[in-house]
Length: 268
Ligand SMILES: Cc1cc2nc3c(=O)[nH]c(=O)nc-3n(C[C@H](O)[C@H](O)[C@H](O)COP(=O)(O)O)c2cc1C
Image (cartoon, rainbow, N blue to C red; front, side, top):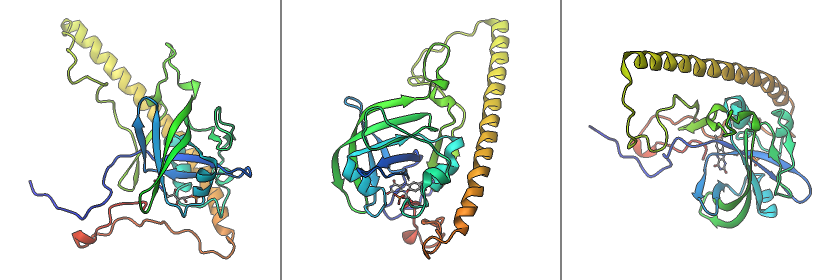
Protein backbone atom coordinates (compact mmCIF):
# COMPACT_ATOMS: atom_id res chain seq x y z
CA UNK A 1 0.00 0.00 0.00
CA UNK A 2 1.63 3.27 -1.16
CA UNK A 3 1.11 6.47 0.77
CA UNK A 4 2.10 10.05 0.02
CA UNK A 5 3.72 12.12 2.73
CA UNK A 6 2.55 15.70 2.88
CA UNK A 7 3.91 18.69 4.68
CA UNK A 8 2.30 19.26 8.11
CA UNK A 9 -1.24 20.57 7.83
CA UNK A 10 -4.74 20.27 9.18
CA UNK A 11 -6.17 16.96 8.09
CA UNK A 12 -8.25 15.90 11.07
CA UNK A 13 -11.72 15.38 9.63
CA UNK A 14 -14.68 15.09 9.85
CA UNK A 15 -15.40 18.03 12.12
CA UNK A 16 -18.55 19.85 13.02
CA UNK A 17 -19.11 23.20 11.31
CA UNK A 18 -20.92 25.03 14.08
CA UNK A 19 -22.44 28.47 14.07
CA UNK A 20 -21.00 30.43 16.97
CA UNK A 21 -23.12 33.34 18.15
CA UNK A 22 -21.46 36.22 19.96
CA UNK A 23 -22.26 39.63 21.38
CA UNK A 24 -20.44 42.69 22.69
CA UNK A 25 -21.23 44.99 25.59
CA UNK A 26 -22.87 47.58 23.31
CA UNK A 27 -25.53 45.07 22.31
CA UNK A 28 -24.11 44.16 18.87
CA UNK A 29 -24.35 40.49 18.01
CA UNK A 30 -23.00 38.30 15.23
CA UNK A 31 -22.59 34.72 14.01
CA UNK A 32 -19.48 33.09 12.56
CA UNK A 33 -18.88 29.53 11.47
CA UNK A 34 -16.22 27.54 13.25
CA UNK A 35 -14.77 24.13 12.42
CA UNK A 36 -11.79 24.32 14.76
CA UNK A 37 -13.81 23.33 17.80
CA UNK A 38 -14.18 20.41 20.14
CA UNK A 39 -14.91 18.99 23.54
CA UNK A 40 -11.92 18.90 25.88
CA UNK A 41 -13.26 17.85 29.28
CA UNK A 42 -16.26 15.97 30.61
CA UNK A 43 -16.31 17.26 34.16
CA UNK A 44 -16.45 20.22 34.22
CA UNK A 45 -17.86 20.24 30.71
CA UNK A 46 -15.41 22.23 28.61
CA UNK A 47 -15.02 23.07 24.95
CA UNK A 48 -12.80 25.23 22.77
CA UNK A 49 -13.08 27.31 19.65
CA UNK A 50 -10.10 28.64 17.71
CA UNK A 51 -10.62 32.01 16.08
CA UNK A 52 -8.38 34.23 13.97
CA UNK A 53 -7.97 37.63 15.65
CA UNK A 54 -8.90 39.40 12.40
CA UNK A 55 -12.45 38.02 12.49
CA UNK A 56 -15.05 40.66 13.32
CA UNK A 57 -16.45 38.34 16.01
CA UNK A 58 -13.11 38.04 17.78
CA UNK A 59 -13.39 41.28 19.76
CA UNK A 60 -16.90 40.32 20.89
CA UNK A 61 -15.69 37.03 22.37
CA UNK A 62 -12.72 38.73 23.98
CA UNK A 63 -14.79 41.57 25.39
CA UNK A 64 -17.76 39.57 26.67
CA UNK A 65 -15.94 36.33 27.53
CA UNK A 66 -18.96 34.49 26.13
CA UNK A 67 -20.10 32.55 23.07
CA UNK A 68 -22.73 30.02 22.09
CA UNK A 69 -22.01 26.95 19.96
CA UNK A 70 -25.09 26.25 17.83
CA UNK A 71 -25.10 22.81 16.19
CA UNK A 72 -25.84 22.75 12.48
CA UNK A 73 -28.20 20.55 10.51
CA UNK A 74 -29.01 19.92 6.87
CA UNK A 75 -31.58 22.68 7.09
CA UNK A 76 -28.96 25.07 8.47
CA UNK A 77 -26.15 24.08 6.08
CA UNK A 78 -26.65 27.05 3.79
CA UNK A 79 -26.68 29.50 6.70
CA UNK A 80 -23.62 27.81 8.22
CA UNK A 81 -21.67 28.29 5.01
CA UNK A 82 -22.88 31.87 4.59
CA UNK A 83 -21.89 32.81 8.16
CA UNK A 84 -18.43 31.44 7.35
CA UNK A 85 -17.83 33.41 4.17
CA UNK A 86 -19.35 36.80 4.93
CA UNK A 87 -18.34 39.14 7.72
CA UNK A 88 -20.56 40.85 10.24
CA UNK A 89 -18.57 43.98 9.37
CA UNK A 90 -20.43 44.09 6.05
CA UNK A 91 -23.73 42.28 6.50
CA UNK A 92 -26.31 41.46 9.12
CA UNK A 93 -26.05 37.68 9.02
CA UNK A 94 -29.13 37.21 11.21
CA UNK A 95 -31.20 39.01 8.61
CA UNK A 96 -29.53 37.56 5.54
CA UNK A 97 -29.97 34.00 6.81
CA UNK A 98 -33.39 34.60 8.38
CA UNK A 99 -32.09 33.42 11.75
CA UNK A 100 -33.61 34.40 15.08
CA UNK A 101 -31.56 35.46 18.08
CA UNK A 102 -32.86 34.60 21.53
CA UNK A 103 -31.55 35.42 24.96
CA UNK A 104 -29.25 32.74 26.36
CA UNK A 105 -30.22 31.19 29.69
CA UNK A 106 -26.91 31.80 31.43
CA UNK A 107 -25.09 34.44 29.37
CA UNK A 108 -25.42 38.21 29.33
CA UNK A 109 -24.23 39.20 25.85
CA UNK A 110 -24.07 36.23 23.46
CA UNK A 111 -27.50 35.16 22.12
CA UNK A 112 -28.49 31.69 20.92
CA UNK A 113 -29.58 30.83 17.37
CA UNK A 114 -33.18 29.73 17.90
CA UNK A 115 -33.30 27.57 14.73
CA UNK A 116 -30.45 25.34 15.90
CA UNK A 117 -31.60 22.19 17.74
CA UNK A 118 -28.81 22.47 20.33
CA UNK A 119 -27.30 25.63 21.80
CA UNK A 120 -24.24 25.22 24.00
CA UNK A 121 -23.73 28.28 26.17
CA UNK A 122 -20.08 28.88 27.04
CA UNK A 123 -18.05 31.17 29.26
CA UNK A 124 -14.37 31.67 28.39
CA UNK A 125 -11.90 30.59 31.06
CA UNK A 126 -8.65 31.00 29.17
CA UNK A 127 -7.26 32.27 25.87
CA UNK A 128 -4.24 30.70 24.21
CA UNK A 129 -2.57 32.65 21.41
CA UNK A 130 -1.45 29.66 19.38
CA UNK A 131 -0.44 31.34 16.12
CA UNK A 132 -2.84 32.05 13.27
CA UNK A 133 -5.68 31.20 15.64
CA UNK A 134 -6.32 32.03 19.25
CA UNK A 135 -7.99 29.27 21.19
CA UNK A 136 -10.77 30.20 23.61
CA UNK A 137 -11.10 27.51 26.20
CA UNK A 138 -14.52 27.69 27.81
CA UNK A 139 -16.74 26.11 30.37
CA UNK A 140 -20.23 25.07 29.29
CA UNK A 141 -22.74 26.95 31.43
CA UNK A 142 -25.96 25.52 29.92
CA UNK A 143 -27.21 23.44 27.02
CA UNK A 144 -30.53 24.17 25.37
CA UNK A 145 -32.09 21.31 23.40
CA UNK A 146 -35.16 21.52 21.15
CA UNK A 147 -37.90 19.45 22.74
CA UNK A 148 -39.27 18.55 19.29
CA UNK A 149 -36.57 15.86 19.31
CA UNK A 150 -37.54 14.23 22.60
CA UNK A 151 -38.68 10.66 22.04
CA UNK A 152 -41.63 9.01 23.77
CA UNK A 153 -39.40 8.17 26.73
CA UNK A 154 -38.25 11.77 27.07
CA UNK A 155 -34.76 11.05 25.66
CA UNK A 156 -33.25 13.59 23.33
CA UNK A 157 -32.78 12.02 19.90
CA UNK A 158 -29.91 14.19 18.64
CA UNK A 159 -29.33 12.05 15.58
CA UNK A 160 -32.84 12.75 14.32
CA UNK A 161 -32.03 16.46 13.92
CA UNK A 162 -30.11 15.93 10.66
CA UNK A 163 -26.68 16.98 11.93
CA UNK A 164 -24.04 17.71 9.31
CA UNK A 165 -20.28 17.26 9.25
CA UNK A 166 -17.55 19.27 7.56
CA UNK A 167 -14.83 17.25 5.88
CA UNK A 168 -11.99 18.51 3.70
CA UNK A 169 -13.91 21.48 2.38
CA UNK A 170 -17.28 19.75 1.99
CA UNK A 171 -20.46 19.65 4.05
CA UNK A 172 -21.90 16.17 4.44
CA UNK A 173 -25.01 14.62 5.92
CA UNK A 174 -24.34 11.85 8.38
CA UNK A 175 -24.91 8.35 7.02
CA UNK A 176 -26.55 5.28 8.47
CA UNK A 177 -26.06 4.26 12.07
CA UNK A 178 -23.32 1.62 12.31
CA UNK A 179 -23.68 0.77 15.96
CA UNK A 180 -23.97 2.24 19.41
CA UNK A 181 -21.29 2.97 21.99
CA UNK A 182 -19.66 -0.33 23.03
CA UNK A 183 -21.34 -2.44 20.35
CA UNK A 184 -18.03 -4.03 19.37
CA UNK A 185 -17.84 -5.93 22.65
CA UNK A 186 -21.52 -6.39 23.40
CA UNK A 187 -22.89 -9.96 23.29
CA UNK A 188 -25.05 -10.54 20.27
CA UNK A 189 -28.53 -11.77 21.12
CA UNK A 190 -29.20 -15.28 19.76
CA UNK A 191 -31.37 -15.40 16.61
CA UNK A 192 -34.86 -16.49 17.58
CA UNK A 193 -35.70 -18.95 14.81
CA UNK A 194 -37.04 -18.46 11.28
CA UNK A 195 -40.03 -16.31 12.15
CA UNK A 196 -37.84 -14.17 14.42
CA UNK A 197 -35.47 -13.58 11.52
CA UNK A 198 -38.31 -12.67 9.23
CA UNK A 199 -39.73 -10.29 11.79
CA UNK A 200 -36.34 -8.64 12.20
CA UNK A 201 -35.97 -8.31 8.43
CA UNK A 202 -39.41 -6.70 8.18
CA UNK A 203 -38.58 -4.35 11.05
CA UNK A 204 -35.22 -3.48 9.48
CA UNK A 205 -36.91 -2.79 6.16
CA UNK A 206 -39.51 -0.59 7.81
CA UNK A 207 -36.84 1.22 9.79
CA UNK A 208 -34.87 1.76 6.59
CA UNK A 209 -37.94 3.23 4.91
CA UNK A 210 -38.59 5.50 7.91
CA UNK A 211 -34.99 6.70 7.87
CA UNK A 212 -35.22 7.35 4.14
CA UNK A 213 -38.52 9.21 4.56
CA UNK A 214 -37.03 11.40 7.29
CA UNK A 215 -33.96 12.07 5.17
CA UNK A 216 -36.03 12.98 2.13
CA UNK A 217 -38.18 15.34 4.15
CA UNK A 218 -35.10 16.96 5.74
CA UNK A 219 -33.48 17.35 2.33
CA UNK A 220 -36.68 18.90 0.96
CA UNK A 221 -36.74 21.36 3.90
CA UNK A 222 -33.07 22.09 3.39
CA UNK A 223 -33.63 22.75 -0.30
CA UNK A 224 -36.45 25.14 0.57
CA UNK A 225 -34.30 26.83 3.20
CA UNK A 226 -31.51 27.18 0.65
CA UNK A 227 -33.76 28.73 -1.96
CA UNK A 228 -34.96 31.50 0.33
CA UNK A 229 -31.64 32.85 1.61
CA UNK A 230 -30.08 32.32 -1.82
CA UNK A 231 -32.49 34.91 -3.15
CA UNK A 232 -31.68 37.21 -0.28
CA UNK A 233 -27.98 36.65 -0.90
CA UNK A 234 -28.37 37.52 -4.53
CA UNK A 235 -30.01 40.76 -3.48
CA UNK A 236 -27.33 41.48 -0.95
CA UNK A 237 -24.52 40.67 -3.34
CA UNK A 238 -25.99 43.13 -5.79
CA UNK A 239 -25.82 45.77 -3.10
CA UNK A 240 -22.48 47.61 -3.15
CA UNK A 241 -20.68 46.95 0.14
CA UNK A 242 -19.07 50.32 0.74
CA UNK A 243 -17.20 49.98 -2.52
CA UNK A 244 -15.52 46.83 -1.20
CA UNK A 245 -14.83 43.89 -3.44
CA UNK A 246 -17.52 41.25 -3.23
CA UNK A 247 -16.63 38.15 -1.25
CA UNK A 248 -14.76 35.50 -3.10
CA UNK A 249 -14.43 32.16 -1.36
CA UNK A 250 -11.56 32.47 1.09
CA UNK A 251 -10.17 29.01 0.60
CA UNK A 252 -10.24 27.79 -2.98
CA UNK A 253 -10.48 24.03 -3.40
CA UNK A 254 -7.08 22.38 -3.01
CA UNK A 255 -5.06 22.69 -6.18
CA UNK A 256 -3.39 19.61 -7.46
CA UNK A 257 0.31 20.21 -7.75
CA UNK A 258 3.52 19.43 -6.06
CA UNK A 259 2.86 17.48 -2.90
CA UNK A 260 4.82 19.83 -0.70
CA UNK A 261 2.76 22.78 -1.97
CA UNK A 262 -0.58 21.15 -1.46
CA UNK A 263 -2.85 23.17 0.70
CA UNK A 264 -4.96 20.96 2.86
CA UNK A 265 -6.54 23.25 5.39
CA UNK A 266 -9.66 24.43 3.71
CA UNK A 267 -10.87 27.41 5.65
CA UNK A 268 -7.45 28.69 6.81
C1 LIG B 1 -16.83 25.62 7.27
C2 LIG B 1 -16.09 26.81 7.84
C3 LIG B 1 -15.33 26.67 8.98
C4 LIG B 1 -14.64 27.76 9.52
N1 LIG B 1 -13.91 27.60 10.67
C5 LIG B 1 -13.26 28.66 11.19
C6 LIG B 1 -12.52 28.51 12.41
O1 LIG B 1 -12.47 27.44 13.00
N2 LIG B 1 -11.90 29.60 12.90
C7 LIG B 1 -11.94 30.83 12.29
O2 LIG B 1 -11.35 31.81 12.79
N3 LIG B 1 -12.65 30.99 11.13
C8 LIG B 1 -13.31 29.94 10.59
N4 LIG B 1 -14.03 30.09 9.44
C9 LIG B 1 -14.05 31.40 8.78
C10 LIG B 1 -15.02 32.40 9.46
O3 LIG B 1 -16.25 31.81 9.78
C11 LIG B 1 -15.24 33.57 8.48
O4 LIG B 1 -14.04 34.26 8.27
C12 LIG B 1 -16.34 34.51 8.89
O5 LIG B 1 -16.66 35.31 7.79
C13 LIG B 1 -15.96 35.38 10.06
O6 LIG B 1 -17.07 36.17 10.37
P1 LIG B 1 -16.97 37.57 11.11
O7 LIG B 1 -15.95 38.41 10.37
O8 LIG B 1 -18.36 38.13 10.98
O9 LIG B 1 -16.57 37.30 12.52
C14 LIG B 1 -14.71 29.03 8.89
C15 LIG B 1 -15.49 29.16 7.72
C16 LIG B 1 -16.17 28.07 7.20
C17 LIG B 1 -17.02 28.23 5.97
